[in-house]
Length: 143
Ligand code: IDP
Image 1 (cartoon, rainbow, N blue to C red):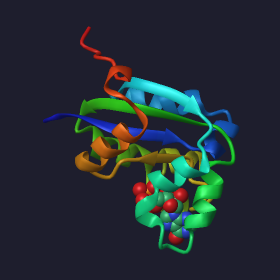
Image 2 (cartoon, protein in one colour; image 1 turned 45 degrees about the horizontal axis):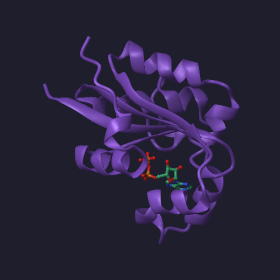
Image 3 (tube, rainbow, N blue to C red; image 1 turned 90 degrees about the vertical axis):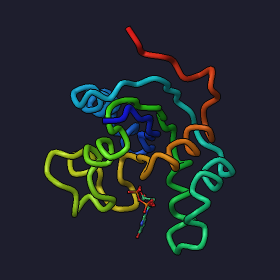
Image 4 (tube, protein in one colour; image 1 turned 90 degrees about the horizontal axis):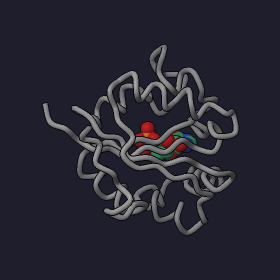
């Protein structure tokens, strides 16, 4: 199976709930290594650019407002089949539909405030990683 990288955001609601460590622990228990990480408070421009594909959707303005409502932690995760594995650990977009034991089932309160973001494909991950991280901010974890 291929070693992949995927992009993850712990969204403002989960940061406010103080469950960063709980979420990191799930990555580690599933053999996903954190190879880059940063905390920041997104600007409106950053959030709009990141979610540009949703700009015509009715929820876009609320999504941007939510994403800039507090700090986020973003990370690059590396591991076998990382993109799909991470999506499985996250659970469905709507926490009411998320499988038991997933991050969204346990920590998200609604589809609007759903705790985490994860890339949906390898190509998306490459684009999302490059949006927030330069190559020299990503560390090899070969030891
Ligand atoms: P994903 O985060 O599970 O990949 P996407 O469809 O890419 O889901 O949507 C991006 C984000 O937009 C979601 O995580 C959620 O915060 C928000 N969102 C998606 N669909 C809706 C909706 O129908 N109402 C409100 N917010 C939504």
